[in-house]
Structure formats: structure tokens, C-alpha cells
Length: 517
Ligand code: ME8
Image (cartoon, rainbow, N blue to C red; front, top):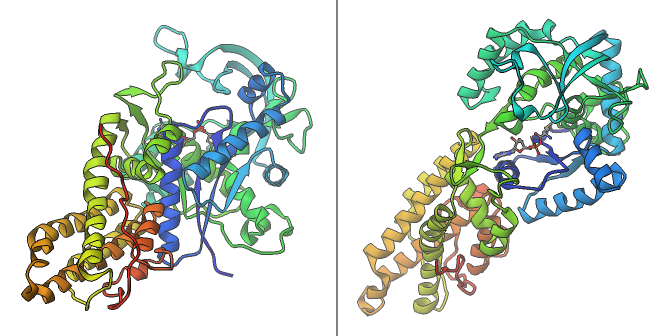
């Protein structure tokens, strides 16, 4: 049984509406998943929803619905959203599903039996909005708490705590010895800095049922439910357990209920946003260590989008609605823009003008124009029949292929797009330099025209394969217009010279209609 390349995203809070940030993260993961498949790996891509907690409970009460009905309705919208983005996830986890809850409870039992938890009385301040306990360190200089915490209440209650502090030195050593564990580098340094400068406080992992009913019951104390993060993070192993992953099943002491065994754990990449870095790079590794499980290979941390230089916010109306953009411009244009504009790491800024400018310059006039004029000329001058092979652009195509492969293997998606675009630019230049429309007027230049037309058609084919993880619909259209039956989803097909002389291409049609803007 081969271990599959296992990639996950953060699971979104079900009670928000899908926005640009959610879409961006899921597209990053989808492109990596598709790229790995194209490179010949077996992939398992997981995304889903985080459905427990106080906010969901409150929202359901406000709408006079049971929390489960409320979640079920919203989950349908989120699943439709995943489809709209063209995601190729292999599973979709909802934390209210029995298969997830069982694993959370098994993990709690294991960790408790191994002595990782203790119960103590907590008294102090609690932020209801963020569902978290606050300490003196969270106070502002004037003694109050930041309004971002929402209502802060004083509490005195018994809870279960997870001994994080015992593992601080181990975690620092691990991060130090595994430079690729947290990417990009500056996020790794941020975690190391935090671990070096502060002592980890033990993590409260429970909430009394009397205060929060909408959660997973703690198996060894029915008076409590699990704190949301201990529930949410476990999705990364609960789905492998449900898929029969032997490593996870052995760690939680369960037998496979699935007929098939799929080896997934450890995850290869957890794609997450910068705000949840501490949960993934500090709490999660320690939870895994307590369960005797290996750590994920990489936590890949992306930045946050703003719109017009301001925080995206429902209350101020400063939002980008991915569905509206996709309906107007197509899903590939949306996928292209977010990955081309923003590297994985820094924060980005969406402007409608910036989106239109890239659409027009890079998609309509760049790739779209190249494919359309190349195939239209082949159709017009050679009746759509591919002429004899020629390899004038083979060197440039090979360069794009090698650079793209290397970038994809390192999850450098923006750099991969730049390498591919360099080939588009070169091929458009080649059209201008060789002027096939002039060659066509001179019968003595027939052989030269054949060469040019072959180079252009073959470059379009190579581009379809290279772009496929990013622009799956467009890549399929290019193959279709080339009259090629198979899907352009195998990277090895990007090798030069696979387009056969004598083959008849299909009908050219614009890929990215120009818009008057
Ligand atoms: O944090 N730009 O859920 P969530 C880019 N349920 N990314 C953004 C963003 C923005 N403006 N806003 C949010 C949660 N995100 C938890 C996760 S994982 C076990 C549990 C990203 O719906 C954010 O950084 O608030 C996170 O990675 C993801 O969207 C889900 O955020």
C-alpha cells in the first residue's frame, strides 16, 4: 500500500459566508493537489467545515433552528462553493459527522489515559466571541481588553487542561532540526521566536456543557464538551482513520471499519492562513506527539487578502464575492488572478482594476491571443492539419517545463505561473517575428510556414499541460481545440514533439473573451 500525498486546508467556520480568503486557500491546495497528480503521485486532498462552538450555537438559536439543521443548511452552500472553485477534494469533512466525533473521542481517551490531562479550577477572564481564556498579558496598558475580544466576562469554573509546557523544548528542537516544517521561513522564525520568549501555558481543552452544549462530549466526563480547537485540528486525522489509515488507527487503538486501507498520515502539507499558525505549529504538533503520531511534513502558511487596502469586512461591506467574480469572468480567471497576484506568504490586496488588468494583459491578450491566432492560422493555411515536426521553440518549452516542475515540487505556485507565462510571451513574440500571415502569401515560403505553425501548435499543447493544475477548464479547451482526446493532466506529456504530423485539429474559439472595461 503506497502512502498517498496528503494535503489539507483549514476547515472553515460554517457560520460565515465563503469569502475571498477562503477561496484563495482552497485554490492553493487544489493547485498543489492537481500538480502532484499530474506529476504522477497519488493524492488525497481534504477540505471541510468546522461546525461546533458557541457562535454556531448562538446563530442557530437566533434563527430558531437546531444547531444540526442550521449546520446542514450552511454545509450545502459550502459544498456548492467548493464545486464552484473547481476543487478536486477527495473528501469533505464536517466536524459534526459521527466518523469525526468518534476519532476526537478516541484521541481524548488515549491522551487522558496517558496522563496528558489534568483538571483544575480556573478563575479569570474569558472572551465569548473568541471562545478563549485571556490572561494578564492580553490587557491593554489602560487595563482594559482589546475590543476585538468582544464581551469579556469573569469566570470561575473547573476545566480539563492539556500539559503543553512539558513539550516546549522538544518542539523548539524539532522546528530547529526540520527547516521545512513551517514555510515560508519568516513564519518559522515567528514560531521559534514565540517559543523562545515565552513559557507555554497549558491549554484548556474543555467547556462545561452548562455553558456550551454544541460540542463533542468528553468521553471520560459527561459534564464537558471539547474545546473547538481540540475538535477542529483532529479532522486532519479523523478522515484518515475513516479511510482506514493504519498509522492513525494504530495510534488511537481502533480497527479499520473501511474495506479499503488508504495510507495517508503523516500529512504532506497543511495549508493554513497566518492567523491560525500557533494552533497548527504549536498545539497540533504537541497533540500529535501525545498521541504517538508523526508530525505533518509541512505547514504552509499564506497571508491575508485585503480589498482596496482595507480589511475585508462584512460589516463595512468591503468584500470580494468570489461567486460573483466567477460568474462574470469564469473560474479559471479567478484562480489565475489570486495565485498570480499573491505569492504564498505575504498579505495581498485585491482591486477590481488590478483583476481586470491581469485578465486583459495576461489571459485575453497573452495566452488567449496566442492560442487563438496559432490555431486559427493552422486552420486557415493548412486546413487544420499539423505539418511536419520542427523544434525551434523546443528549448524554450523545455526550460518552462523544467522550471515549472521544480517550482511545483516546492509549492512555489506564483513562480510556476511566471515560468509558464515566459513561454507564452516568447511564443507571442515568435508570431510577431516570423509573421506567418506574410509567409502565407508567398508559396516559396511554404516550408517555413509549416515550421512556424508546428512550433506554435505544439507550444499551445505544452502550455495546456503546464497550466492544467491552475486553469483546468482552459487547459481542457486547448486540448479540445487541438483535437486531442485525452485530458492534459499528465506532466510528462509536456515533453516537446508529441503533436503528430497529419493530425487534424478541432475548432479554434476564444478562451478569454475580451471585455470592454
Ligand atoms: O480559522 N485572507 O476558520 P475561518 C486570506 N475554523 N485567508 C483568510 C482570510 C483573508 N482575508 N480570512 C480568513 C478558522 N482566511 C478555523 C480553522 S483548522 C483546523 C480550523 C483563512 O473560517 C484563515 O486564515 O475563520 C483560515 O486559514 C481559513 O481562511 C478559515 O478561516
